[in-house]
Image (tube, rainbow, N blue to C red):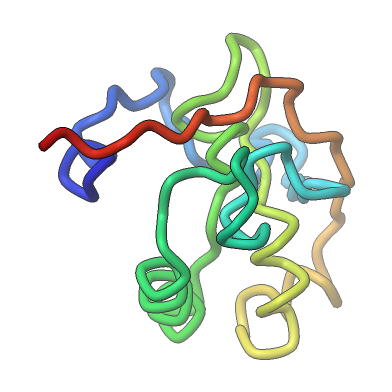
Length: 129
């Protein structure tokens, strides 16, 4: 799957579908563990979402530098109906001490650890010739 194909996937619906904070309570949801296809799993893991380490690092480094956060793809735009968006566990662990936004959330916001949605892993498929 190319980056362009991933970017053209349908986005979850709702007023703020990728917001990890509950709009009514302000509680910020963080995945308690990595989802089955976490982008922070080993690149050799066949269940991992199809993104290279280099693509992931370039993207997540930029997001952290801009004081943003990455929503778990299984709780974000690809989440099952009714599952709330949550900050990716791998991103939280890797960048919490490097991102002012995540440090602020960790110190001052109310957080709720949530289990990642139970979804099938992303199967690896060969690129078309």
